[in-house]
Image 1: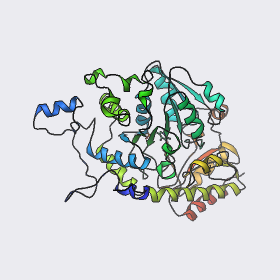
Image 2 (image 1 turned 120 degrees about the vertical axis):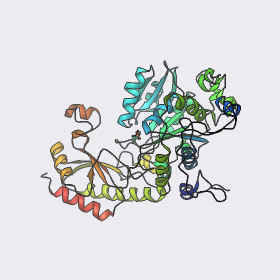
Image 3 (image 1 turned 90 degrees about the vertical axis):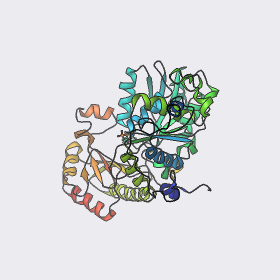
Image 4 (image 1 turned 180 degrees about the vertical axis):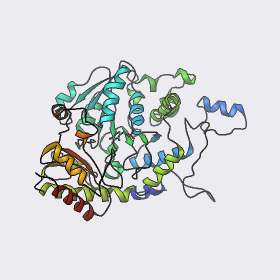
Amino acid sequence: MSQQRPNTQCIHAGYRPGNGEPRNIPIIQSTTFRYETGEAMGKLFDLEASGYFYTRLQNPTNDSVAAKICALEGGSAAMLTSSGQAANFYAIFNICSCGDHVVSSTAIYGGTYNLFAVTMKRMGIEFTFVEPDCTPEELEAAFRPNTKAVFGETIANPALAVLDFEKFAAAAHAHGVPLIVDNTFATPINCRPFEYGADIVTHSTTKYMDGHANAVGGAIVDSGAFDWTRYPDKFPGLCTPDESYHGVTYTERFGVAGAYITKATVQLMRDFGSVPAPMNSYLLNVGLETLHLRVPRHCANALAVAQYLQKHEKVAWVRYPGLEGDPYHGLAQKYLPNGVCGVVSFGVKGGREAAETFMARLNLASIATHVADAKTCVLHPASTTHRQMNDQELYAAGVSPDLVRFSVGIEDINDILADLEAALAKVNA
Ligand SMILES: *Cc1c(COP(=O)(O)O)cnc(C)c1O
């Protein structure tokens, strides 16, 4: 079959039923799989044959959905995880050990920052954080001899900075390490990071991919383009024998394009077990079938919201990379020509208090610690996720006290704007 277009891949990629088989991806709700002989199963344990034996390692439902995401990103191999957090942890830990180092953009999701700066630091993996707008020289200065990867987000949550792919990929490749990109906010509908030099892509599928706030989940996709065997000293886990599998060398047995995901599956999933429930993968797939329809609507609605807020007298500032004049408009046009995402951030005149009044008066938009699903929702970080911080600390974290994160859903735009209008009218600016 010739290469399908993304709109078709959203519906068909990853699963093709045979004669008389279920048309939907079946939910294989089974922990285990039966074999005729112990010998046949032994071959699976030695990675000498491929097949299912225990769902913690692999499950057919999960694999079909991973294959769809792999096709959408244009990768060589992919796996699902039980959360976006697990995906980013595995993506790094698969090639880093105690004593290694990673360069990361500062403009990343707060949970990822915590994972890197606190939890993985306790494992002996150090991170150097660089501003997304750093000069090539500043980026260069962040590397060390033990650097093993570079990390960034296509569109940062919640900073809405767009990654300068060219700059980050050039630096990573000059140092012989992969660029790992969290593509959650853009989705492959708006950006395919492999086309711009990324080597590994991760997702919190919890957001637009699922799209309906049904199930927490994650994904990792390998481009297959990064040649680990050129740097065997940097990536011994991929290029030298794994004692826990009788001396299998992943790059030899599974090839350059298959080694990374195979290792993450048979080693990290085996040992950490962040496996998604097949039922959740089924729900994720239902979301993926309409991703190509929902994402453009999120983007059109968000742009209309941003333009409306920009003109409103009670609004102090608006950040949306799709807006002309936004600091990331140029990068958005270059890397996200079809649209950005559904999330807009802005400040209400009158600071923290005005933001709280405004939010309490919203009716259609619900207050929720979530973004990127069908229903419009809103979060005031200063009074919720970041409430322990005083105003000075908030500014240092890049979250001003008046910042409102508005996740625009796919309702009728006139109803969303009317809700904003009514709530802003209650604010005494
Ligand atoms: C939400 C999010 C995560 C974490 O994903 P979970 O599915 O909540 O574990 C990681 N990265 C980004 C960009 C996110 O928005």
